[in-house]
Length: 568
Image 1: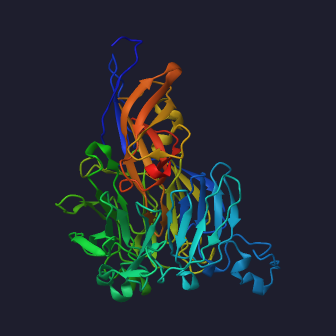
Image 2 (image 1 turned 60 degrees about the vertical axis):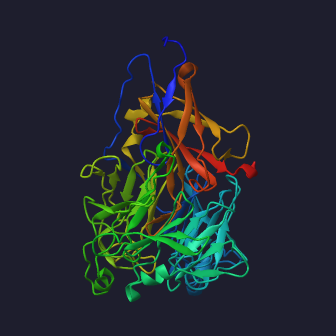
Image 3 (image 1 turned 120 degrees about the vertical axis):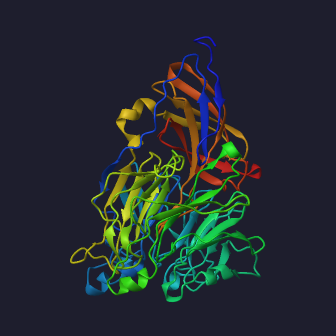
């Protein structure tokens, strides 16, 4: 190969998630660098978001929707006028009227500011998903909100869109339920809820059947303790659902209303579901194996009897174990390993590198108001490709306790927004162990450091030839700029942003995409031809954050939409 000839890239797929790895062949040996796994840094973005970040979701317009519960009456964002136009005068009656306080805000990432939104129902402990056009669909909540459906979007940046209440209702009360976007028809399945051992669809499958009984949810219920709320739900690549509650899990065919497989019970005592509250991710799906290997990971939870003990003022040490299990194929076994410390109410965030960030939570007790102690201040970074015993790295500690009702989400620049924490029934700032927390932070993984700028892909753009999106299995062009030559491995990751609450990141998934060709251009520009996922089972239709990852250093992500052929 001549020095100035066009360099050939042999694309190979390695690692986990929907990350696409390109191996670059040079005339001379390339300089190989190593992925950063330092301590990271914390950045305080806002002192007061106005509402507790109980629920959070990133929009494809690079804003973040946060909301809590109208049952707290007073939030930190007092309104001058109710949404019906009447004035809030600051009288005793007005100060006890939830309509005089905002309970949802939209945070602008670019402006680092919030604006209040109109969300009047008590959406506390609800679920949500994001449709293919970017609309956030919120389902259920407390009291009269338990059968309600709210949605926000689609909207363009700066048009001031707001929450809307759907005229249709859920068939059953959905409080502490989970939600998953399905592969077809922009349909959502809502699973479980307090006292609801069933599931249903939004929109409904038919007018005849509203809710479908699921005995698995009833069998995993611990009576007064519960321990099967907010069931963990992951969409597998065969279009079926992995559902985990308490300590047990099944593969569920929702089209036939049939449990097709019962998986082994996760080893150890204690529980992983609310109020014991562990967290879960589906590890990155990879084109290397044709997206056929599906592995879930569940970390943390509460000890047996933790809920009853907490009501007596005793906070039992949380679980420190994680379990990984391949749910595809025919051989299933939990592989257990220990985190650096005990943890519950933790959030698990998939990073563009394919690593897992474990953040937030407590070391003792269980979920609920005043039911936990010992904030878990140190995040953990988990590398699923290392050998057991070397997978966890303890990162820089925060000074802000993120206990019950906190959340964390990945945003396009690769940082993780952290908000919320309110272990109190109302907004309480004094004379409690852990006051209501309204500060918004960003955790910056080590890969965001300036010292890696020369390795970071810049100015990423995606060419879809003026179409609405990229059809499954079709190719698209990714163009980016490098200050130096790419390293030996170049990867392309696609990330579905979740709806997150109570340690559950609903619909989160990361994929490694296939690179079929990459060529160098003038002045450090590179053009990569990338292949979209093969089907909606692998990646439900919608917007994904696409990152170019060079030797473990991700670019700022850009949005790409994957669509069905009939959508063009």
